[in-house]
Structure formats: structure tokens, C-alpha cells
Length: 415
Image (cartoon, rainbow, N blue to C red; front, side, top):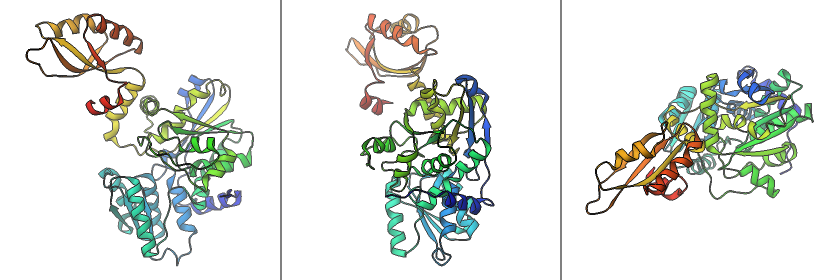
């Protein structure tokens, strides 16, 4: 598709949204400015009414449709942020909305959608994945001749998301770099269009999770491709197929695409919370997690990171911490072969573990009439440099059965 957003359409979207959304702050961040010797600013879309930028595109799309077209209602599918944006838009426009969500959606997100949409929305839970819910939503939309509100692949959605760019350029017209989280491409297409139209010299850097590099691979191939498998952990930016409308825009305006490991994203989520009390969802932390890859280029420059959302389910905290520790090389799992004799565990604790090593998991079943008894042991380190000495001590005393972290199938099964 040859669609490129027009600046006047993005400005028209801003007019529609001015009484609907919050103008989110562009905050100077002392922590990361000092770390990278640059002026780092956070565009805080996590402070938006629905705790993400999604309300901008959803409302702009719905408000652009003729009244008779939405008279009987609208339909959408989402596992989170888009559903909330559509729900609030339904309430504000007094339009009925049928919102399809996977059956696996946490109750907190379902309740949030119902709270925002009140009596104007109906949540339908179906299927185990977003794709299942999306297929059901499209079928319902077609059968009932109701408008379908897509999460990212629509001109009006893109133009609505582009209003983030208007606010950034008004607050910091002389920025040098902007880092934008990329999922389906709606936000990056809209923002990059506006920013490049005002200042073509601004370097636009898109950021995707390493486990879902759909835009990265599409740009490399020169066409939209569909990934067979993705890691869905960074759920706000994990798509198998980027938008057909968004792709040519990103192809024209994005200067570089970066990939960030999911574990590093988790480290940044914890870091942002501990340092600045910012509750970022995984997709919301992507832009900050990518700064390290541009550490040399951004020195002395003005840099904006879009914090795209803050809908982070508190039940994911342990998983986030676990992924962070694994990525940072601070948590390791082993099958340890304990000799079937008294004092073996004491020897392991006293002579093999380092002074700062901590056993955080231990599962052991004694095997009768065998010389060795295997145990699954998890060890947390304070410094990743302690790993090799620990491994060498285990090998030297013949305790090591297998290192689990790098055995994906066994790790997934046991941990």
C-alpha cells in the first residue's frame, strides 16, 4: 500500500482528541541523562487516561466514522490496551462496543475494560490466543455489518497515534533522537511522519522485542512478512505481522530498527520502577532498554524515549524478576549429582557455593541403591563473574550433572 499520512490529518486528529486525552508530560530523566551523558526525556504515555497511547487512535477512528455507520455499535479484538482505548471511546461517544478478548485474559484487564466502557461495552471471551479472539471478532463484525476497529492497521488509527509526535515537537523542537516502541507499526508510523515533517534531521529509531522482530525482518526483506513463531512476553509489541498501512510509512521514515532481548526489557522495567517509580509495561520499557545500543551516538544529544504504556499486571512481577536475573547472568539452574552419603549437602554448601551465592530452589528425591542422587538446584549470584568459578568447583568435585539454563526444552519442562 502507498498510504502516507498527511500532516493536516494528524492535526485534525489532535483537534478531535483535545477534550478527550491527557496531554502527557515530556519529563527530563536525571538517571539516564547522567548514565548516557545526554539529555534524556521520557514521553509519559503511561500517564494517559487508559495508561497507554491507544486511546488516541481508537477515538480518532471511531469519531471519524459517520454517525449512521456506528449507530448499531462497533467491534474490536484486543488482549489489553486497545480494548481499553475502544471501551473509553465507546463511553465518550455513547456507542455500543463488543470487545473480544482471549479466554486467558487476566481478570484485572477485563474489569478495567468494563470499568472504562461501563454499560456501553460487552466483553466476549473466546479462544486461547489473540488470534482466536481476533478471528471471532472479525466474523461477528462481518455477520452483523458493524465497523471493526483495528488495533493499528488503519489510516485513522495511525493519524491518532501521530498526535504523540505533535506534543513532542511542541515541547522539544530541537530533539536529535527519538526511540519508539514498535508492534504493529501504528505509533511509529504516525509519530515518525509528523516529526520528520517538522525536522527531517531527527533520527527515528524503532525498537522491537528480539523474540518478535516482525518490523525488523519486514524492513530487511523490503516487504511485509509473517513470522511463524514469536515470543509473546512483550505483549504490547509482539505481533506476527505488521500493518500493511504502517509498513511503507516506517520504511520511509524509520532510520534504524533495533532488537532488545526480553530479559533486558525486564531489567529495565525493574530499574525504572526502583529509580524513578515508573510502572512501565514490557512494551513501554522497550525504548529505554535500547539506549545502550546507541550509547556513543547520543552523547551530548537531546533524546526522547516514548514510554508507550503502564498496564503492567502485578501478577507478572515474579516472572519479570526471573527473566531479568536469567538475562543478567545472576540466576542459574543445575542438575546436581549428590553422592549418596551423609555430609554431601554440607560439602556442597560449604566447599562449592561461594560466600555470596544463594540457593533459591532445591528439589531432591533419594535414589535407592545408586551412588548418585540427582537434585534440581537453583542458585542466585550477586555478581555474574562468580558463575565460572562456581561451575569449575562443581566439575572438580564431580557434582555437576547438567547446566539447565542453556537447555531450552529441559529448562521449560523443569522450571
